[in-house]
Image (cartoon, rainbow, N blue to C red; front, side, top):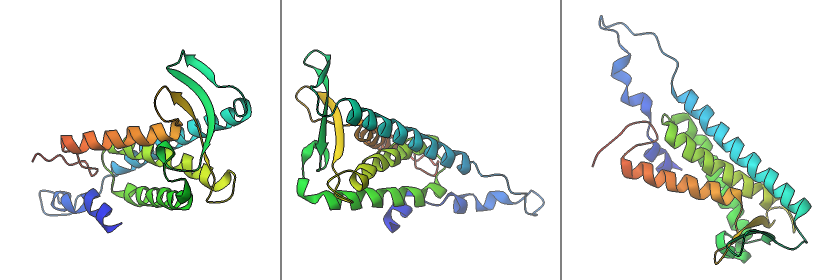
Length: 194
């Protein structure tokens, strides 16, 4: 957790000298722009979570136990499966570990949100948070039991693993974080060029 906070940084210390007025008196504090970024993070997270939850409820109600639906010939179909493992069905015996990892990711993102001053980072972390919450909900509330639940996957491209919208949000958030890191944009809004 300390490593993650070190990476995010604290923007408050960077601008400490800028709060003084030209005559040496303290300037009135402005409303921090970070609050808008936190709102953006949580709006993206809630949208990703609700889309994932709604799609899984629809799949369980209408598709589970039925023949797959072909969307684009043999290239893409909808096929409801329960995945007790991680991505690509790996690690089926470690469901409880994946549950703990998802819970840790959620806690870290929420703790670091107060130091967030970058809208692109807010979107990326919101996608990660919404996706992690979506799959964690399955792990907690779906059978076979609490913290051992199987995730509902249903998007089945040809010659690829079956996944869901939470997985898509996590992957998109991760790709965005890599791109932002390569561009030198930090979560606190600073830009650095190496």
